[in-house]
Amino acid sequence: MHHMLENRLTSIHKFKQTIRYPIILFVIFFLLLFVLRQFVLPSFIKLYETNPEASSTIIISVKIINIFITSFFILFLLIFFLILIWRVKKHALPVHKRIKIYQSIPIYRTFMTLQTSYQLAVHFSALLKTGMPIKNILQTIAKQQKLPIIAYYASLMTMQLTKGYHLSHTIKQLPLIEPQLTYILQQHTQMSALEKDLTTYTELLTEDIKFQMQKMITMIQPIIFAIIAIFIIFIYITLMWPMFQLIQTI
Image 1 (tube, one colour):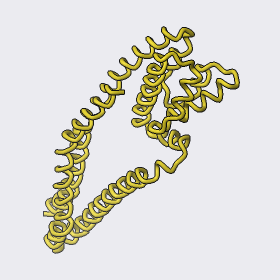
Image 2: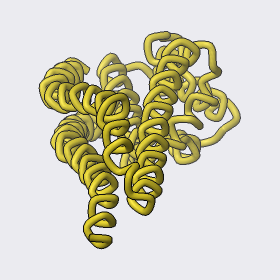
Image 3: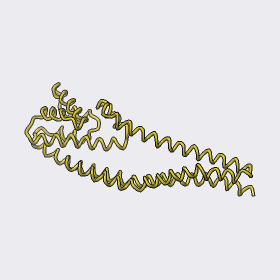
Image 4: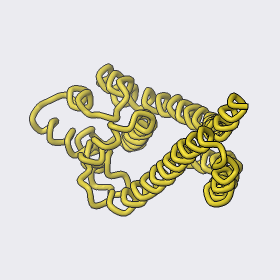
């Protein structure tokens, strides 16, 4: 768990460094859009209003740009408020509903599967070292409150063990759990061998989580730069279109 926290803090620091310049560019881009909408576009309308064909074209261009800018701001505000509502309301949602929401988000679902599998494996491995039986281990995990998903899973597995089902049968049906963890729990009956395999699995999973985080961070800047570039090209073409129309009439 300590290694995962270190990796998360390092990844958060790298993420902040990576996102800093795109955010500055976005702020500058928003300011340019405001200036464009308030000052440049009215000047273009006045410039072309003497030519009827170009005037109608510039009006269409202005409408397209206005729709584009308005849609962009609405989308940005919608995402912002959804994130804000989620941060405020997520603790009030039952755990099983939170799990369904996590499953519906493709990229985040992968990260949550790795994280949940790691948390369950590292707790299981640590408690196996104390010599506790599996049922007591699950009851102990179910009582902790810092990690609600694995506490919920542990309570489900405890109920299934009471009914006579094997641990692997129960965990196989749980979402956000890697198949490899199910395989490890299914293969071993000796506690010492299971503890060693889980320790090795958590080490491999730590590296996998670190790799996935770094991969995601390295993709952020190019994607944001590409989005800004597409927006600039779109606005440029939209503004140049009336000029081309005017040149053709000369």
